[in-house]
Image (cartoon, rainbow over all chains, first blue to last red; front, top):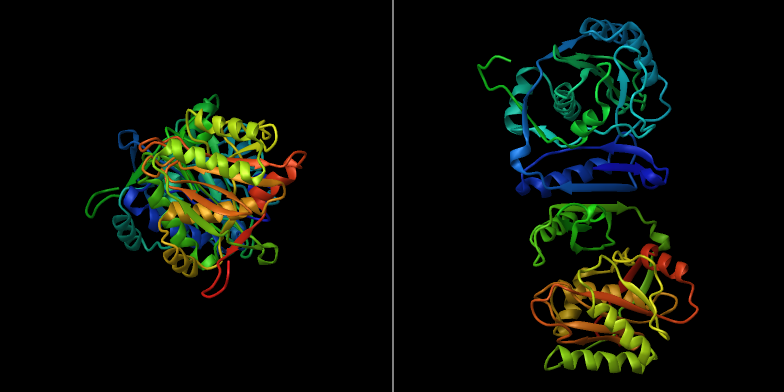
Length: 250
Length: 250
């Protein structure tokens, strides 16, 4: 689902919200209703254009991926949060130049994008050529919503942003060539952001000022990665994120 | 809503079904669910691609149009039905050549189209250049579904095909330059078709062989009509069809 205000995205409308699910046919109706409700009552504004695309996915091509371990870092303000996020990215192997340039590209956005920017983890150069559209990660979900909800509750996590962020980041980190993701939301009321990598999904309680509707995602990509293959994986490979059951170690 | 099998229409998928509604926001969720159910259980096959586009329409630009009067002509078989439909078209002012060529283009279809063919009512020449896509009539509905259902019951009419046909034909006939519409369904189980014009919505109980999944629409257009304006009206002008209330003359 993607929604916009002032007409369709391709007609110059402003992006309001998007959502991606991977569900069994029986749940399609309910999920679609929920998406519509969300599109028409978003904190970024009410949509006047909504597009929903549904594609059948053969079960045998769905890839199971284990949910990333999660940790929350409390920070005083978004300046402290961004500094901590930078440290985290450096510790994962993203170069200082790439961290600076990647974050700069996110900070300098004048409006939100539907998708993510792909940035070289060494040079910080933008690698995709999709401009303000970005690469949209699609076809992922949790394999069991109830188990995920329980697990989140145990972790003290709640809300659709955390849920969607973890699912998306888990798929992104499983993609060939991705070293890390940096993200903060375009929802003006949601200031928590994260850095994700094989080390885990690290939340920072403040990565942007309250009230800002500018947010986005940067994926830091290993040098000399096959960008076309990577985009295909992000956009098309169905992924179901498996949630650790009670007692099982992450 | 449009649905296809074997991928999206634009990727070569086969058109399965389509539906157009114009409803208040509160009914959006329910209507969308119904559309999805239909897409996944159509007599033409089950879709594996569905696209739903929702656009806000300002109430003040919605045009009310009176439902066409309706009559049903019983025919023995589809040969007799097509002969009767031809007579009806001639009586409205479509030329013999245009009737023959228009019907030929419908009969010769090798698969169904999402939209209609625009054909000159004098020469029978195809006027739109949309090939197998056709011109899709959109943004129309009845102004009161309950009243329409009651009215249909009084007329001995039932089912989604009759309902959708009458609404669509009423909008089509109200369009600038349209003289008549000829239609039979691509639903293999539905053999009734119609000719619509200012004279009314004339149903013929058989216009194609049972089991055929080939159907479509031909709009007969007055010579020298502004085709671009006409297409804009058919695709974009919101129309709510008003249903005569009890005692009111059609």
